Image (cartoon, rainbow, N blue to C red; front, side):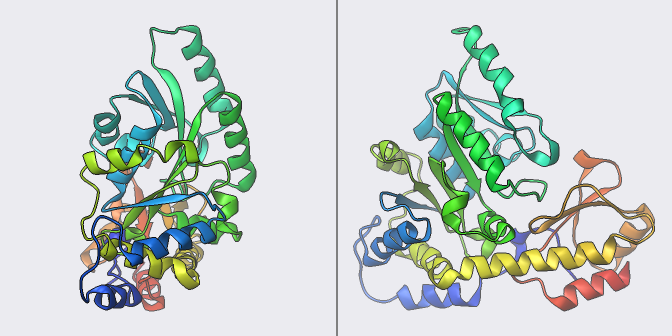
Amino acid sequence: MANFASDNTAPVHPKVMHALIDVNSGNMPAYGNDPVTEKLQETVRMAFGAPQARLFPVFNGSACNGLALARMIRPYESILTHRQSHINNDECGLPEFFTGGKIIGLEGEHAKLTVASIGDLIAAARGHAPHTSRPKVISLTQSTELGTVYSLDELKALSDFARAHGLYIHMDGARLANAVASLGCAPTKVVAGVDILSFGGTKNGAMLAEAAIIFNPALIEDFAYIHKRGGQLPSKARYVSAQLQTLLENNLWLELGRHANRQAQALRDGLIDRLGVGLLHPVEANELFITLPKVMADRLFAKGHRFYNWPNEGPDAYRLVTSFATTDDDVKTFLNDC
């Protein structure tokens, strides 16, 4: 039966697994001083058109977000993000723990922030200084927690606003491959204006492999200490780096993202005209948020299909997530059983 519970449930991509086997030979320098990680540094700079970028391998996305934000704010400062973002809802206070600062969750249609949603808060906070935390970072999720994608125009507007008000931009890119594939543009355009990117590999074919990519040279210094103190400096970094290198070279990461997106569109197309099925948000990446009649959902669960009820979106709301490992047969079987 089909598993649409999460892209975290997918296996490691065969090419990534082979890369782990290939790198598992002989001794190499530790803590990122190995030739595999050094090669990855250059690959990242080429992939994102950022010659001064610096990559720091980490083990998971939550810690990657926490480390990035810890470099960007002081304890009396705040992070502006969407109310439904991962850092606000799904990281058990880790960003606050790492930074000592405050997260402020804002509203926005389809889980996207806008300049309008941020501007009034900035003015109010600065007018009430020093009695409220000072906004310092805008954290964007690309693609968003509701399966939508910021357009290039939306990203530019937020980046321009951030620069005009002395704010940093952090991007949670756990599903960045899906966003870039959806936009159909070069990765460099999607990260233009971003100071630190949390680059996701685990949801896109890797195993325990993420990276903080710092584009703003002013933030590179001292990050090595945050990396170490946060418990995310891999001693055998080659095993993390080899996975990310495999994803990035020859644009495998985008190929996998495109596949997951196509399967999500196939699900959408097969569901949208069925009686009782409603689409809650545009399907722009690899997540669908839909309403289903309870009898249909119960029958699908009974047949062994896996997906989540999503009560934040309503009593009959459900989330379905596709991945690089989702097959045509998975989609066909699920739709037939509907």
